[in-house]
Image (cartoon, rainbow, N blue to C red; front, side, top):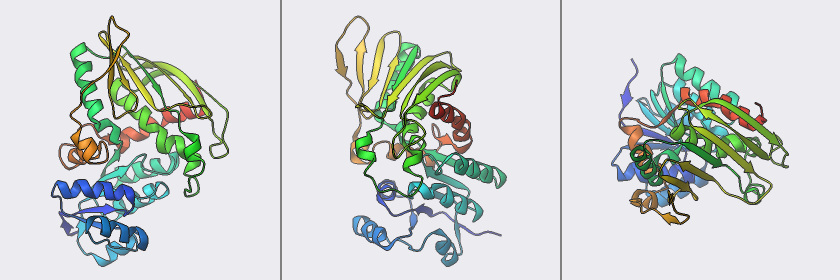
Length: 318
């Protein structure tokens, strides 16, 4: 019989793992850390005073007889799927993996298939679902009687991304790796598309699939939506939500502005965002949810369902 420990396993010791560790410490959650590199482990230990088991997950399991029931995967983008599949095979039963849960579409589907086969619960960390701005917007949307329509823009800052040094395949899959933050939030607020027409064109040296995106449709909740993104032009992530009383604007996503019916003025909405400013935005409540009721988290099954819409947007298919 497998012996389990209640101590959570944090996989990774880089910058994102540090952000998760800060929250785990604040929540008084016992955890162990498994990392690969000596340099990142040294920086992790210096930052938090927590020992890192170096050498990767396989080495960790060889050195520890008791298996953690729970794990958070915060490794580099190219290793997300690999690390999660290793955890599943070793008997970990509850996993939160950083978005999008794999390097590419194939990798993510493999995670879902293995999790289903071995009856493991896997959740995908889209932390923007847990922003204070989103929480406040949901309150206003409910009070106003729901969303009438929604517009979003997932333009990426190409001038920042192109010079980045990333593992092979990461920048080529940047739409999936990063832009889906915005699209997932739209799905979360307005529902999945029932009908959608998509168009894509252009390319970049580091992203050959497309660089300009446009489209729209109607969600399963009957909400009309449209989107546009141009990675060759200036821009930034934006979501605009229209209700019968307000236009709610996420620009930047951590903030919330409102244009009220009958006015042109755009005003800032005051937020209780101490947890977003004290920790990496959205992470505190995301981890709370994962360790508690797991409401509002994206399941790996949901993520795989969403992949077909991501692929449609990326490829510009109608």
